[in-house]
Structures are given as C-alpha cells and as structure tokens.
Length: 351
Image (cartoon, rainbow, N blue to C red; front, side):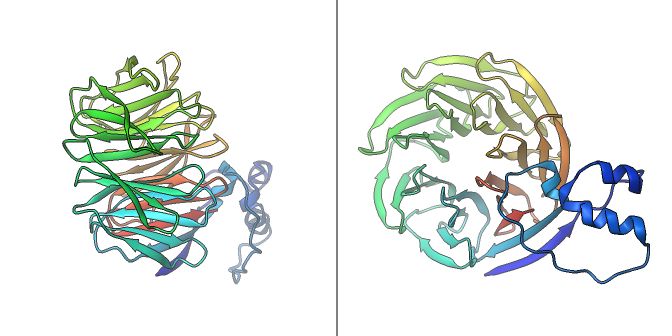
C-alpha cells in the first residue's frame, strides 16, 4: 500500500526577496519570485515532474514522500536495487518484502528466517539479495525472491551485511564480536575478522573492495585488509557504542554514527578525523552517502532523517515523517532516499 504527501521547507528568517533570488536554489526560485510580487494568498499549482537528477542542497526545497505499508513489525533495514526498480525491507515480523518502486505494491514476501530479520542488501548487479538477523543465519535469494543458499557460522545475532563492489564477497557482522567475509559463489568463509571487544553493529566494504570497516559496542571503528584479514588501524573518538558506518562512493571518506548522538567523518587512509556533525537528539542508527558525494543522510532514534552538505559539513534540512525511530537510510543513484522505521513502514523521499 502506498500513500503520498508533500513537505515544503519554509524560507529562512531574515532572507530578503532580493538576496533570496541570488541564492540560485532552483527548486524554490518560482516560489520566491512570486513571494516578492504579492502577499495575497494564491491557489497552489502542480509543477511538472522533474527529470531525475543528483542530490544537491537546492533539490531539497520540497520533498515528495511515498510510504510503503504492509509489515506487521518494525522495519529494521531497507535496500534499493541497482536498477531502482525494487525496494527490499527487513522486518521484526521475520519477513522480507520486495516492493515495486513504481507502484508501491508488494511483489513478494520472503519467508524462511525463524526470527527477526535485521539487514538486507542487494548485490551490485541486482541479481542477488542477502538477508540476516536474529536466527544467526545469512540467506541468499535470487532476483525473484527464491532461496539459493543459507550461510551459517555466526554464533550470535548477525547484525549487518555488505556486498563488495565486484559482487564476489559478502561481509557480515555479528554480536559474536566477529565479521565474516564470504565467497558469494561457494558460500565458503574467506576471512573471519576478530579483535573487537564488543558486538559489531555494522560493517561496510570500500569501493575498491580492499578495505573492510566495522563498528562496535566497544566504541571503536576498525579498518581491515580484506585480503589478509589483518587490522590496518583502529579509530577512536566516539563516546559510546558505534552503530553505523558507510564509505563514500570514491572511498576517500568514512562516516560513522553513534549512541553519543554524533556522526563523525574520517579519512580511512590515514585514520584522521575530518569533522564531527551534531544535531540528532538521540542515537544515530544509520548513515549513507549520496551517489554524487554531495550529501550524507543520517537516520536516528529521534525519528528524524538529517541531510548534511559534505562540502560545508553543515545541516541542509531535517526530514520528518516517521513516527518512530529511523533504523535505516540508503540513497539511490539519482535523487532518491529510502528509509525504514520502527513505525513498520518504509518511505521513499524524492525532491
């Protein structure tokens, strides 16, 4: 089931008509121009649908929100297929749903997990879907949602998943304090990464698939050599458990989110801290980079999604719409953001 509404961002206080015209914010130019000419109320008109474009600060003047409803439990994780035709959602109700992005209809409900499903991820070619959760297993499904293989090896809850950019490796993380690198074709374990002193919340693999990042309840971020399984460096600075991690599309930046309510940006090659972003009023569950590397999205326990400008390292805007904590955010290749929430819904956000 799909519902839609439109959120409009108000003009910032203190911006005059003349100065606002100079800002060049494409998505609000027509509104500002009209506001400068008249203060009389007018009937709203529908603008023609814009062609897909990369995320930019100007794009988020107004946001269309589509809501996918159907799960009977919290939505812990969402993934968008590379073709942007399907959305996968993982839920507390022990199912995965595949959604048609164009219609908002459920294409298929995947069953097989015996406990809550905590993570889903599409392979880079979109032909495989991986899922994992509280039953400690990792399951691989084909593009039609048919089961292919079940991977076992973790001894506690498996918490997150990430495919390498070449599609040959799947990385999983677990409360057993390990991350595992799996051969996608054979299901064999390539490496088991050990060293964290607490459960591992999340994992990511660099675009060149040479480096794996893990974040843990032990408040650290560890960067690993994907080939040897050796620790390259350990990053410290968060004051509480680290729950979220993501590499930028070019691999030059790493973002982490924490229970300490902050997001930190790091240089993964040197381990240097670039910036600390503050604004969430509770723990940060998820972080994701836009495809053009201009924007970072973060989802929080405070029920909001925040969009950050990566050039200025400042907040662009806060997206409100979920009525429970936001557990997962992911960008598409064009102007599209997908989120999953404890309110049992997934949302599609488009400027």
